[in-house]
Amino acid sequence: MASRSDAGLPSGPAAGGGYDTVVVGGGVGGLVCAAYLAVSGRRVLLAEQHDVTGGNAQVFRRRRAYEFDVGMHYVGDCGPDGLLPAILSGLGIGSDRVPFRPLDPDGFDRILLPGVTVDVPVGWDRYLSRLCAALPAERVGLTRCVGVLRAVAADLRGGMTTAPGVPRAPMSQELTAWGGRLLGDLYDHCALGPAARTLVAAQSGNYGTPPSTTLTSTHATMLDHYLRGAYAPVGSGQTMIATLVEVIEAYGGEVRTRCPVERILVGDDRQVAGVRLAGGGTVCAPLVVSNADYRRTVLDLCGGRGFSPAVVERTRRATVRAAVATAYIALDRPLDMPNTNIWWWAHTDVEKAHATALKGSDPAFAFLSFGSLKDPGSRTVCPPGHSNFQVMTLVPPLDGPPGRYRRDPSYEAAKARLRDALVDIAEQALGPFRNRITHLETATAHTNHRYIRNGSGTPYGFDDWGGHGRRPNIRTGVRGLYAVGANSSFGAGILGTALSGISAAGRILRRPLLAEVCAGAVLADPARLPPRTDGFDPLRISRGRARRDARGLAGIG
Image (cartoon, helix red, strand yellow):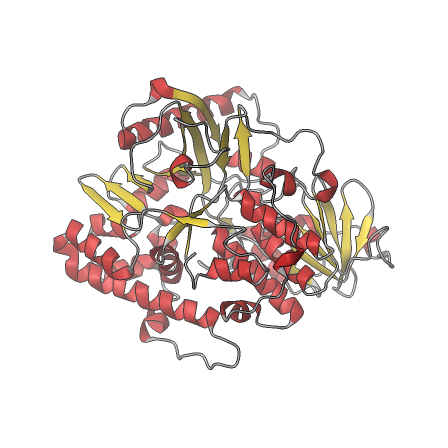
């Protein structure tokens, strides 16, 4: 719990500040929320503990030759009526500033099961046709299953984007019957066999849980997101992050990096009063938006102060989804393949594969993402004639902060085994390439904690917060405190966290921002954003104005 000194909260404006909102953490959710508040006239401070903003959407560079995206491997629904472009356009950010390039519309994801290969195309009808062609004996069950998923996704999306003043359509029978039930139950209802179950759930690495614990609505919205078109940002995901920083700063907000928050201050009246910074000093503000891990927000930053005992206990007991391990690989030759991702599965028992991952055994499935295919003209992804890709799999989440682990012999040995297993999988999918490797490194759940300060090392958030699929609301119950990010009810991923950010801003401003921007509203003036020059470096911009030219920024070339 909070110390007694928190009860006597300081008053008055922060030194040199006078902020009315502090955003803790510069992931996508925090940045989107801060940007919408800034363009609406709020005085915003965003405090990020790392060297750059972006959270799981940031990039890192190696050997002055390669740039790897951490988490923005592909995003869906970025067409003319897409949700993410609408959120950006509401901030005056058009495709000229944050362009998205489509992956292969005839197969943006390639699913590899033993004896079965399916290239997933854009569009629900074509998707179902490919599934049925791959498993013709399962046609009846697949048609029924995909029909439910499609209807549930359409209802949920329509509910979010209905224009202000327009009555919402009544919930469909499918949403009423299946939206809150588990995907595994839908499989049973449709009498799907093992191969069909695995094929439909092949992209479950996008949210990190098996059908037995995944809500049908979660899987339906993920599929719909990508079947509307899969894209990758031109110039890396850091370009979107940098542009959000530019919006915040153009409207008088401040982005501070290397600025960890030690405490969110909550008074005896359960009203938030600001934050105390780890380096000393207090920033007073009547509104705080936490983009930090929800468990850390409740138990550590607030010390449970202001929350009900039930919420504190539920948060303490909550389980999280799997963590992620990634091998980052560069080769001195290009890849001769379409602009697609690969989902590789060792067998067709989807439940066993997820259980194996949570035991820390050798990976039974993996996701391959190819940066050099998605942005072939980039000057930062890799040199001409080279390639850059990642191999990811699920691993057990951490029980808590890992402590000192670097150079620990047992950790290094386990990491090396995992690295070799991921390279083996990649060679099964792509053919031999070991003798052409120019860079190879591995990130684990420990790495995620080190850079993102996520106690469990997972990018997916809670699995069970008092019930499967149950997640915290944007409103926390503490007056003036809102929580955004991967643990919110909007889910993980780039779009999910962006939706949490615009939702929090909308609740603070008391206006339906998402519906407004989907209807074409633009709250910001694009002319206020700085011009782009040939030397534009999104990683540099993402540090915030005060640290833009600080030492330690990795370069390319």
